[in-house]
Length: 226
Image (spheres, rainbow, N blue to C red):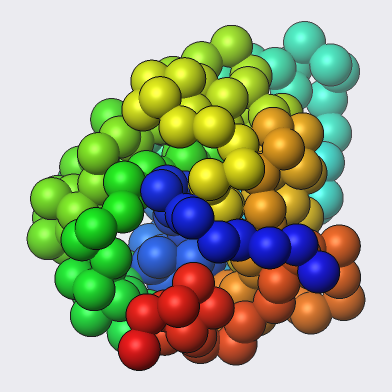
């Protein structure tokens, strides 16, 4: 097990780690797909395909749907329109149902001595707007989205950007997330990984993390805060 002593920076994933946003994302997806006759998704179905960013989310929805199969170029046109419709709706309904997970706010308040960042595969503007609406943006020194850098998680590029910008070496940083995408991104950048089991992935998918916690408050004891 890796040592996380002398910690300076904590990087958090957003959806499934800091906030439970499944209902609002599902509602936006169903709004986006409604003109095409796709079967509406449940929150549970959305959670199974979430995590790789909006474009991949829409592509997965099209591929799995009983709606129009069409040719590749036809699907591309549907995808682009659905992306526009998703952003139109989601921008106005970011926090209808989305809430921070239990213990998030209290934990962030106790982490004042550390630099903190968010890396999400949600677009940067939407990530910041959601955090602001929930009163969480003030806790973070930096927020990156899927469009902030050239590659998104599971690439290590966004993690390296945070390290470079905040001038922190990898051995003094950890990334906290709920999926293997976060684990891969952290490992690629040389930072320790902490996975939470309360998010959108099962424990089995998190087996490669350096540490696994069931409650965000356990992060405090993990890094030595009583």
